[in-house]
Length: 125
Image 1 (cartoon, helix red, strand yellow):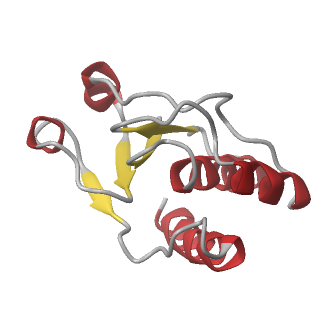
Image 2 (tube, rainbow, N blue to C red):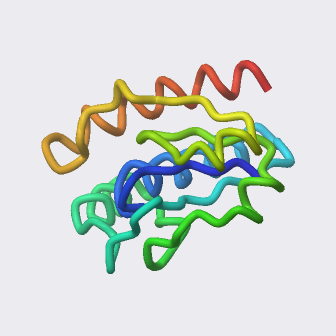
């Protein structure tokens, strides 16, 4: 399992997990992704839900979900858009994608930056 983490678990991680799962399915990889947050919001970003629908995708989660220690320990890899507590970084391989612009400011720019990272990741798998 691949875990994408953003602070609120409502936007970037949701976008990344949805696109990763599509790319992984298209390329017949045996991995799936989930989206998690360190301080989850009460609901998903409406901008992300609308954008994903327009892109022909659905969010992987119905509500933002908090990242757990158990998930960290069982993850194949974690990709984070925000700083993670040290207790997590000691238990798993974490790569930071901190160059992605906020989804709330520009869905397309954020999506395209995430897709660029995902294409590099898929090429490395």
